[in-house]
Length: 518
Image 1 (cartoon, rainbow, N blue to C red):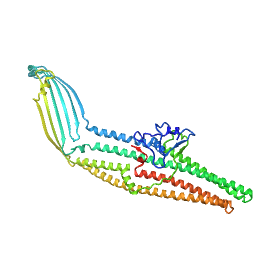
Image 2 (cartoon, rainbow, N blue to C red):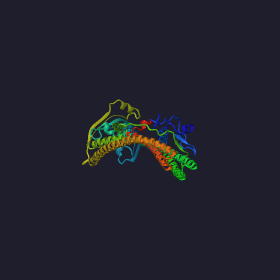
Image 3 (cartoon, one colour):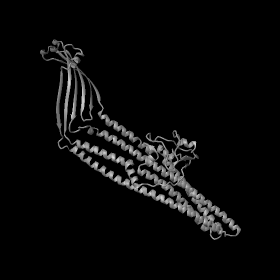
Image 4 (cartoon, one colour):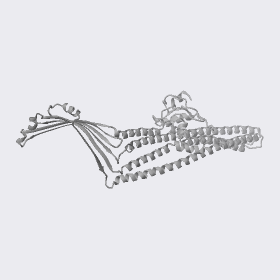
């Protein structure tokens, strides 16, 4: 194709996720253009020459369904990050000041007005653990001022206290274990895989749709050529008949018959031209070429409809489909998610038995009221605290957890049945697709043989007409038969191309065949 075509078609990124690195297989020409696709709408009156592979790349680049589906893996990736964030540590800091000033009712207090001030400044770190437990590391600090006579006589109206503590909670039954607590992460990762499988499925559907529309346009153009050749033969026969009438060897009715057939075949050409425009528009729609009502110029396929025999292996095709079909992979991943949910809900039936323990160091400075000595005292490890215990709880009846468990069981079984149903459906699709390829290949051979025979019949009948032993009516009939045979041959060849494309889709190998990478 020319430079203008190279600007339109390129090896392009598919929804920011797909890229192509090669050519089609069989008769199809490779897409050799490089760079970015700058403009996909041909200008009015300009012809856009496209190979099959170039059409596929353009369809993948422009298709809105792929663009929409391409967002889902990114959305699911964000869900994975959110699920993992449950185990992110949280840092905290707290500052609190409280002051109390009140009149004393008793002279024993030593002061008429008592005043107490507390300043707390605390910081720490807390985190949920994949084992199901959690910890909290705290560093608490307190400054206290009290003007009571007792503290004033001791010279320690102001005191500083600090405590460093670590608290750990770990369940042993409900919510115990890394696998249980990573369930949502694994489910989110699986959902992302499912979204990628759905993107692959959409991409393969687009590839198949592009090929079907491409070969329909190829047939429409070839059929138009057949109709034009048939019209030309009728006109040539009319000229021959006029010469025969002038020579006195034929009746004028021979001219009338030929001219009537010319009119009929002109109508056939008109219908064929309309079919070309219709097929061209369908291809433009699949390629998403029209923009804002501007349909641009003509689209001309550059790959001819050559017959390439394919011998499909039915057992191998079924095995490929069950290994490569994205919707089958997505169903298996969905079943895995149901298994994970069932395991989690089974765990939630257990009672809650948790260990809770803490250990801490503390320091207090009342004699030299300055912040720092209390930290030295804390660091000496002379003053400490610790605790340990078990907490047990169980909801009476536990109906909510039991209902979720029963629901998860039904959903798991439902996913199993759906997977089996999909397996049967895929197998049936592959078997039908293989039969279609085989039948279309046989039809190509049969229509080709018919066309050859029709050509020979017409040649013989034309010789008979020249010899005066046949009629214009018979020659026109054989011309029509030849046109039908020629059109049927092209149709079976393009149908075979479409059948092979469909087989690639049901086998799940359309991406690999056209070297489209996810």
